[in-house]
Length: 106
Image 1 (spheres, one colour):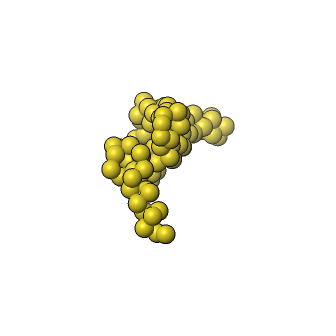
Image 2 (cartoon, helix red, strand yellow):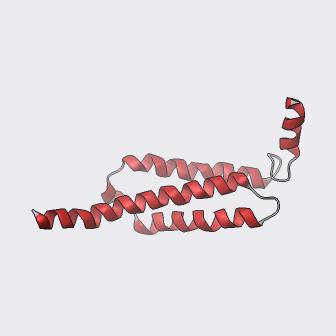
Image 3 (cartoon, helix red, strand yellow):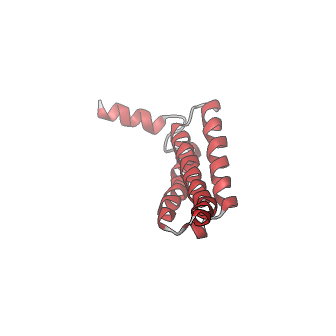
């Protein structure tokens, strides 16, 4: 049974023998790099870069569901990329604008 599941995965239209598998798999590196950047200070976050990651994630998550075959690896990666980009933008906004509010109150 395990052999047939492995063979089915191997021969799938979005399986390891195609670019539809390897491109999203390698793209996970971008998401992992963004997670590593969570430890960086908010001053070093770039709005354009993180907005681009968010938009790319949203666009490709939609794209992965309308192509044939559906590419769940691309979908998962894209949603994750959009989420990490959103988190980074939120950190930057909190640092840039919320810090000013607390300083004004003091």
